[in-house]
Image (tube, rainbow, N blue to C red):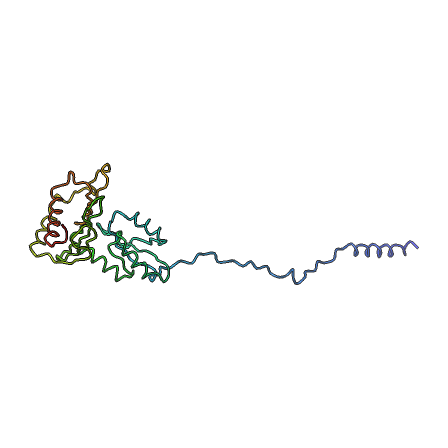
Length: 253
């Protein structure tokens, strides 16, 4: 009897141990699927310059870049960059809306802030630089409180001159004329005076109001004269000679 109980007890223990073993974990097909995290490309594509939506502007006053930018902002236009900056020449690039290039070219031509407005490409930029470098002197008179003459004058190195009369002048609109060899030689002589090399940028007195300004651009510099006090004789000579040319052509009074 003793020998029969031992095998029976061994069998019972082995069965109980088998029941206590945890079943193997079975992974479902869904659990075995690989989790793939899609990485989105967050890089911002580089915007290429679209020249069909840009125009070129030549600034009348090289010192007025901030004023020009403010003017463009009011018109919902964007100053893109300075394309050329040398001496007293500033040529900028302006971005305009799609399909509005021709409209804004004509619109900005009416602004005194710009000497020229054109479509922008490499050819027009080269032409504009050449035009500016060919100028001998630019002469501009702005309005005052009274009847001051208002006009622009450009005299090129070959003696060709372009007069644009605006207010209180004998001729309004654009008038072209040619300096004689003698007149051109004399003007070059005035501009060669060494006393013109160290001029102030502005001759003015902020306490005096309602005065117009005379802007002269020559020898890669711009000079603004608002108050005719303590002006170098050499600068007065240039001013008076140019005024005399316009009087002789009966363009101003």
